[in-house]
Image 1 (spheres, rainbow, N blue to C red):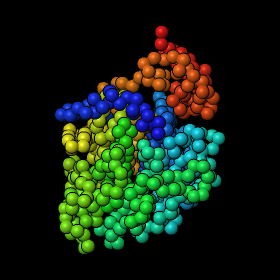
Image 2 (image 1 turned 90 degrees about the horizontal axis):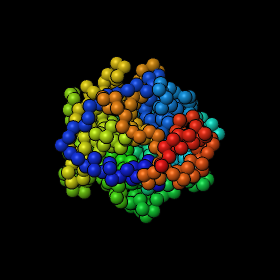
Image 3 (image 1 turned 180 degrees about the vertical axis):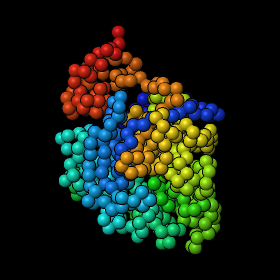
Image 4 (image 1 turned 90 degrees about the vertical axis):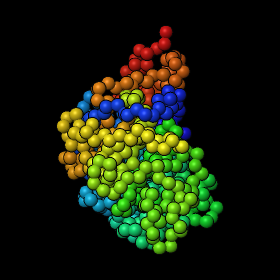
Length: 469
């Protein structure tokens, strides 16, 4: 089970009570500059258990490692550069490039991570790489291609990938592009386009590169075995709730509606979200579609108009359910936004209760605390503590990463957390766990309190300083 989910479960009782409240707006927020010298960044994420770094994908085909814990955060260096393999790296408006990154749940032991990019033929590629002996540098020669999916047009590539709480890799695929899904890919169960895929990557070797989870809805026939859900147009940015395992899907609209879709953690897959027969909650009248609305379709949980203004937008950016510790009043709020209108929103969502406490955050998040404009939103990001970041998509001197913080300036996290097993005391059990991670192998993990890349005497001193009497 991914470390992020274990962390969430450990705090379940507290967070569930806080997150279940409604009728209360989120606390006052601001945005804090982390780094602002990134080149068209598209996404950022953390490795399991790593509270020290974020890994940022740049459209051209590079992954940058960012130290997020120093008083002055900085780019440590380039983790991977596959620029020569990637198409669509120089245009801010194009939809091709290096689009997704995910670390294997057992990354600390196997060093595997996965990328999603458009290759020089314009096809979607999902490939596996491995970290080198240097934890801040990957081995570019370790590539293993898992999937290559031909794209008929240059837009609607999707691009998001992540491991779910079930340990499988989820891959968001757009409908193949153009406009209106001319080949009806999203409703065609024999193509991977317009789908959410789910596979089980092979980490014991290279053949086969992946297997089909036996519980996939079409694993035994009736459609492409990799399909988990379908009826999607361009599911650009999505996320799993690190506490509950629920999946939130931000599906970019055609020209009428933008939408957020939802899949509960206990889903057995097979949801049809309706595109191209429906855009958000609007029937399209496309040829060959059944009567609309259709009870077989899964409704979006949030829809807004394709239009100007702070209530609308033209390119939804799915975000994250806040599960961090720094801003207790933000617990249970889903943070999301819109790229074109540079809107930022928070909302609560509960099954059966729908969306409540929807709040516009624009004046709080831009400009940042240092006066930088926070716009051109390409993605949100979540670090190893559950804190949320904004990824600004712009060129070398303007692309950036911003942390959402409390306007009060107070960080409510107990940092560092030295009670590893959450039993209410720091004792021999915690000491044994720290010693088991001793040395460089424990670097950037939960026992590397000072984020210096190794577990050593400094970290031991921190643990002993919190020893229970």
